[in-house]
Image 1 (tube, rainbow, N blue to C red):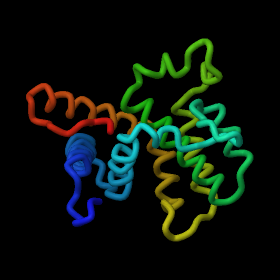
Image 2: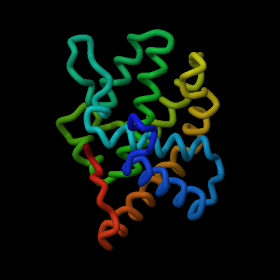
Image 3: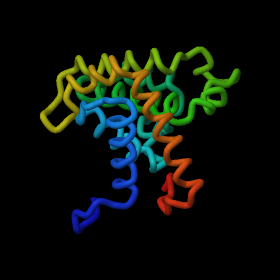
Image 4: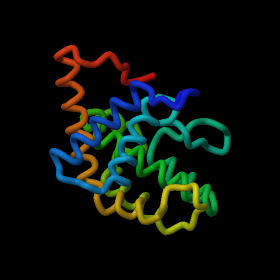
Length: 178
């Protein structure tokens, strides 16, 4: 939020699109889940959020295989947050930009054999089972993200279609990556 607590245009844009697609088109009334997806879009509109997980040498973990290895080196809430990030990362790419998976999983990459949907579901499930503080994303929500991963990915594809349709009509002045 901005200092005056007014939502930014980007927040309003993604909140509105998420609610429209999930509530109206998909009939999903789980507001907590829809808000989570909307916040994921807002977080990942900043490119550096994609590289949030760091290896021990400080380099970003940019492949799912590396992120999973990093998660296994951590304990408690740190492990939970890496698994949650893996779920978010795989949902973002498989839902919003599935055409990019071929490049992300190229022959020269460790991720070439990773099933992003299966890994995302597994990561959210693992994160849901690790106890966290009250400020963290509730485990019950992460469990629903695991159970509803494919539907959320489909919802993200519909959100992209909707913003591209609006952008094609000249209705959107909001930059999508900051």
